[in-house]
Length: 250
Ligand code: URA
Image (cartoon, rainbow, N blue to C red; front, side, top):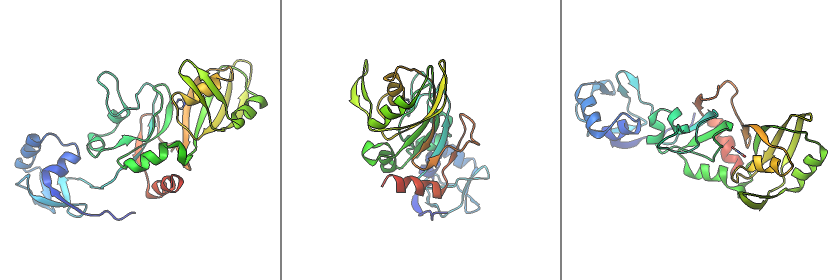
């Protein structure tokens, strides 16, 4: 495990980072004797603690402080990739409030109807490096489309498609297309792209005359979606998984 650097801060700030309510709410929690620091009941919400070194518990539950958090989410369909939205559920609503309080944000965007691997991190630089097309971090998708695919499509993806549609015009970087099955009505393929333009994968297939009917992101760089996570489930990244992403996005 990576060593956690201890950080001195007020107890109420630490509790706020864990999404435990407003300042006055937190004061009440402390006054009620629900918080212990190194085994002793805390009485002053303004007391200094060493987050990452002191043992801070709320109702007996340890608040395990880490300065940086990285989450792997199996994004389900029907949820927006956004920090918040007034009307619709977002990926941040699937995590405990602590993650938003610690500044976690989605690293990139999946469409509302796309499912699969999404990294949510409080490390803005890592997020930027994952997203930046300059870093050429590959993203692998499983796509189902409503028509046949063949060698001409593999060649066109590899050469770099020219996209010109209602959303605009651009030259897509070369992409690897692997056809898993193909028939007149439906095909399944894996595609690896290094960019993340608006509806990129859907538009790439549309430029070849087929519509994407199902899209799932399987991989970002060398980081694969943990298939034990059902849609909507998440877990923190292991240290070696973070290292994989960091190496990839150097
Ligand atoms: N490409 C798309 O078209 N949609 C996504 O959600 C991701 C990549």
